[in-house]
Amino acid sequence: ININRRYREAKKNVDFYEVTRGSWLIADKWIPTLRYALAEYKGFIVEVFEIDPDGWEKEANSLRWTFSGTRAPEEIRKLYHNRKITKKKGAANPISYQLQEPENAT
Image (cartoon, rainbow, N blue to C red; front, side, top):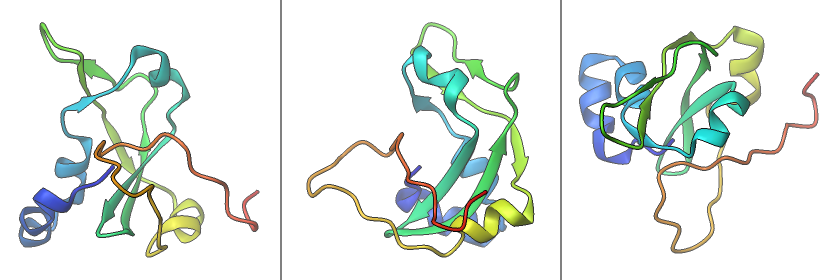
């Protein structure tokens, strides 16, 4: 999840969770498949959160969702934190659903 617009706010308050869990336009079909949320700033993963499967809330009269979760376990964070990611040129959606597992993933 791209947090470029709110990064300074998160850094100042040292709270990447609140800016990452946000209000996101996500198709209902994706909700059960999402296990982790990776906060991305300028192409780098700055934090990783484990999503509570029962922690999704849909905003009233909207297609937007907010998740609840916790900072991911250290073994998961090590796989992604501070890693560079690439996006297709011109991609405007702040959410990307696909991420390949690192080679050393279990």
